[in-house]
Length: 255
Ligand SMILES: Nc1nc2c(ncn2[C@@H]2O[C@H](COP(=O)(O)OP(=O)(O)OP(=O)(O)O)[C@@H](O)[C@H]2O)c(=O)[nH]1
Ligand SMILES: [Mg+2]
Image (cartoon, rainbow, N blue to C red; front, side):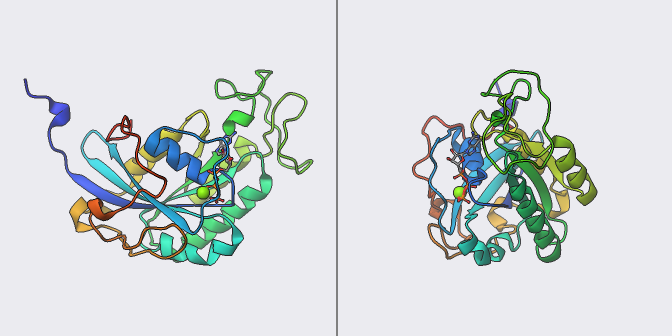
């Protein structure tokens, strides 16, 4: 019996870049999305890393070509190479570090100024597991009262076990003002990770989607640390720089 789910669907490539301060969890979000894995002590990215993952929407398949940039300041000047021609961006902050939201706002402003017009930007507050928000926490399960920004510049939990330093309201209000998608995620638990990529896939305008082989938004980023060179090449020539893919990983994401 014919399986409709296996029927060929149009496939489109989407170039996506991750930006944000060092150690906010960019690579961890990608690792969760691509391999459904998490590493407690993930090493900092050098330059950038390149990975791909498919996202199956009801009517088409989106193949994300993901450029995971390094957040360390010494690599900041490389970023334009990676966001050039990008159709989507994940700008990530750590919701236990207010300074990382300030940095995220700078990246958003730079993208709005210099990236492709119409780029879909998602603002992502990561490390939700360090808060005591209901159902997402690995900290205490005491009452979920969001702390507001400010106070001691520490990454530790307060007396209630809540390390949140950026309130959902503050970040969401900013995202709404700037027309950004907004999610709070945990790469550690996987909370909302697939949802971010699905929302981006759905938000890319049909008109900016080209066929996968056409190399939409390829951009030719290259150089820098452990980045693969030549974004315009075919899939077979690309390298997953975070090591071999989990053989058990699904070909498509769970979108
Ligand atoms: N608790 C918790 N820790 C996380 C989460 N995401 C990442 N981490 C940890 O935060 C640290 C930094 O994560 P990375 O993914 O390397 O951060 P990054 O943004 O890629 O950092 P750079 O490559 O230096 O820019 C690692 O020790 C991760 O294990 C999360 O959702 N929750
Ligand atoms: Mg990284």
